Length: 60
Image (cartoon, rainbow, N blue to C red; front, top):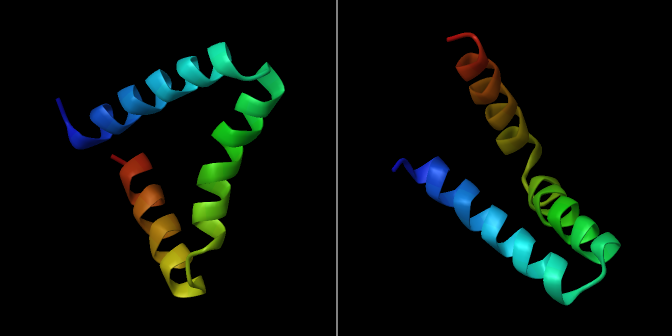
């Protein structure tokens, strides 16, 4: 299993656990808020590099 697949599986597991313990809208905010906060915490140069890598992978 690749690293990205492990991360995705962990995210799905955490999401399901959150849906059981907290209201759905709180889980939704957490699932969207954590990656958004992580992206906003990057420097502008790191954001450019991340976008460039993502576009390259889409062209494969």
